Amino acid sequence: MANEESIRAFVQAVSGELGSEAISTGEEVLTRYGEHTLPGPDLRPAAVAFPDSTQAVQKLVLAANRYRVPLYPISTGQNIGLGSRSSVRAGQVVVDLGRRMSRVIEVNEALAYCVVEPGVTFQAMYDELVKRKSKLMISATAGPPQGSLLGNALDKGGGSGAYADHFGTLCGMEVVLGSGDVIRTGDGSLESASHLNWHVSKYSFGPYLEGLFTQSNYGIVTRAGMWVMPRPPHIESFFFTFPDDTDLHQIVDLIRPLKLSNFVPTQIRATNDLYLIAADCVHPEYGQSGGKKQITDEARRALQKRYGLGSWTVSGAFYGASRQAVQPQLDRVIAHFTRSGKGRFIALEEANEIAPLRISMNSYEGVPGEGELKMLRWRPGGGTIWFLPRTPMIGSVANEFHLASRGICRDHGLEYMVSNVCGPRFARGVHTLVYNRGDAEETARADACYRALALEFAGKGVFVGRAPTAYQGFHQGQRMSAFVEACAAIKRALDPNGIIAPGKYGID
Ligand code: ADP
Image (cartoon, rainbow, N blue to C red; front, side, top):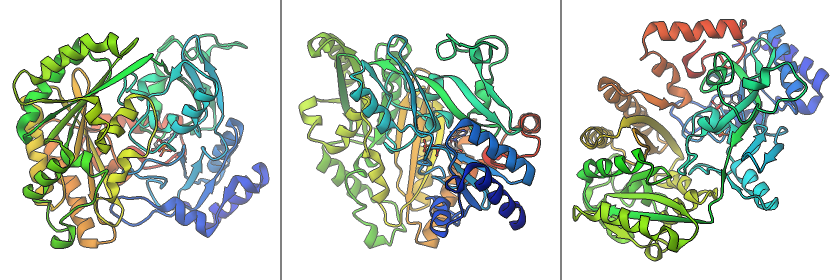
């Protein structure tokens, strides 16, 4: 952490060079940018900067190098359950790129990509495409509509549609390195006045540097190209429900061939009862147990009955010219999931009446919505931690992990809430630990629960794909030391004074 004197000199230099609107040390601002939903105290920054251009970001980085002040870049800081707006350590200067860098620089209809600054949110891009009467659609997330397209992609966030791999849709970035140098990646690195392939051709010539800027602290991305999909004339969501907890075994084995063959173009989600239902109601037994116990199976079954859902709900979507055109695919998928006698098809008319399923439909249709975030109200106190491992698409393996996680959550008196977002070979297991952050004992249980889950998965050979700031150092410590050393060596090369987010993703 920089000392007070260097922070003061830095703030003065930045406001001299970029104007007083480019940096704040206001009490209310520092409090707000320190807030998060994880265990542990809020992490108050030393200041918050608001650059308005790549040149301004470069000037900030150069000043930070001069005064040895650490900078923590965020796009919009809507990374709820993973750190929100707060830096990885207290006393860093949060760089809020989104506030003043929120331009949609280009929408290319022919080649189906857009070029955005960090402040372009899911909602803003959706609105922009509607305004332009564009034929393109974004890949929405179940997260906040005010989250950044670019921030989410850089942190390897995911959607549910065919373009769900958001980092994979990035193509061509402009980056201010920790040294203050500005680079264009890929074909953009060509010394030329124009770059025809910057946002269409991936990998380009030589090493692929874009991977360095995901979940790292080597640079600040000031703009990037992102591929988007032409909106199909018709999107038909489908839903199935399975009654028993251990049905996950057959569900995963049923999903795998549909994804390996690309018969279903979207991700297929296998979501458990409480993950869906918690978006629409609160813990019915919280008062009774004082939050100390996991919901009982009787109360869980009663909720399942109320919402007409079983233990697991499977969802996905087909794209086609019309409802009629996708009917044969739908018929095949219905036969596939109902063959064993356990899966029940939920017709669209019925699904429309079940609030938690409407949230999924929106997401398949590329419409941002608050939906799933409402699950944070399941328990009082606003605490949530996301645990994000990935497991291979083998039913017996998925079910073994599910039973272990359910047991660990029960042992810590917390609910098991998970959505398995399934691709062909692995599923992202989005686990949400909702707890009362206003209660120290419950917070300690949530922290212990996260660590127990992480150790259980790691012991069986499964790592996380993304992690909350509070646990990034812990996870980096689970890796082979040569890998950790390689990360540190790259840090020294690109950011010799360790200016950008020291400690982020466990890299110093
Ligand atoms: P979102 O707006 O999607 O919630 P955040 O702004 O919270 O995303 O950022 C998510 C993660 O990505 C954080 O770890 C943040 O430090 C990192 N990040 C976001 N934007 C940038 C950027 N433009 N350059 C470098 N890192 C970034």
